[in-house]
Image (cartoon, rainbow, N blue to C red; front, top):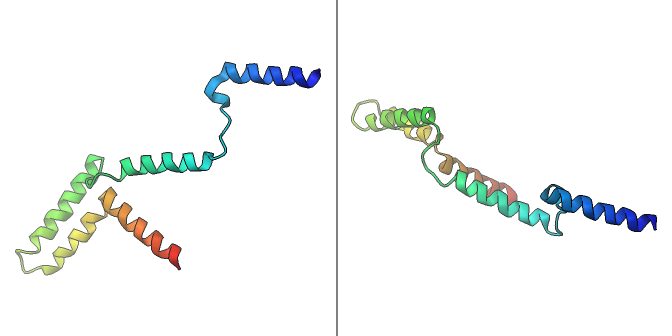
Length: 105
């Protein structure tokens, strides 16, 4: 009798709270991974940074690297690589490839 009452109270409590007491399904880890992948895809889908300060830095390094083609300071071309650090997609792709290489070892 006491056990049935406890189960009934638990059901009422879960219905009252709704999603707050949502019990995870058997494959909750897979569902979470799918959601995380979707969010990561949104964040890494753009080549340009989101905030304006990073965009300004990226533009400055890009222009400095571009200037290296037209001056006697060829080493300025390396600024292109520095400009790539500010790109979320480029950094995501590099991190993904490095992670795959380390996973294979």
